Amino acid sequence: MDPIQKIIKLSDIEAHAKINGLEVSGSFHKNFKQTIILLSPAYNFWPIFKKSDEYHQKIIDPIDTWSKRVISNIAIKVSAEPKFPFGKNFGAPFFEWAKLSGEAWDSPIGMLIHSKMGLMVSYRGALIFDQKIKLRKRYPEKPCIKCIKKPCINACPIDALTPEGYDIQSCYDFLDTNRGENCMTNSCKVRTSCPISVAVKYNSEHSLLHMNAFKGIK
Image (cartoon, rainbow, N blue to C red; front, side):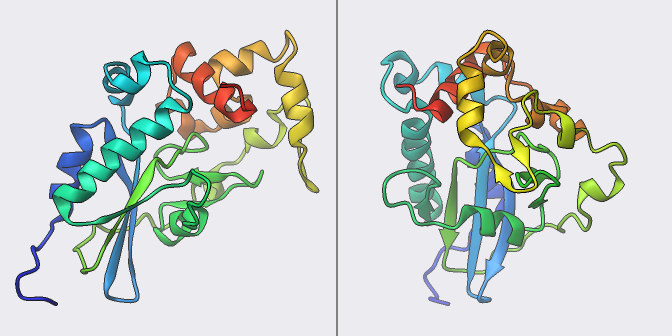
């Protein structure tokens, strides 16, 4: 390690994330030389985001634009390289990173499930460090193992999630109907059916913004 390189602590990263409405949602060491830190919306994300220029200017993809600005600024402060799960050439394997963190797994319906956020997990970006940061103990067990009822399997009102894969067009079509309005304003029924997801509750405006982005509505 370069002797003049600043030693970064996980607590430093968490502090920068918290004041910006984010939290560390996963972390792991890569090749014994790098540390990858994943960032997700925290409990205070929405009120902080609503005060931002991105929200008030009504720009295209406001949360993505906000995430890029905020996480890039955090990266400068902690001497890291920022990566994002969006954009034309993002290229970063966030699904793989999430599972390597030991805090996210494939769920019975194919979506990622997180140890604390359930199926409502969302990654806004990552920080790449060229040093080995001391990390906390990982969650040892996939939560689905102890979930007896597995409500996510039958939660979709149109069975868009099948053993053959995700019928995304049927999902789009349903969301355009009156029956689909509840999913637009109260989030996807499959995601919210997860017992762990109860801890992550979007208000109707927050949910609608995400669902419109999912549908490609600008």
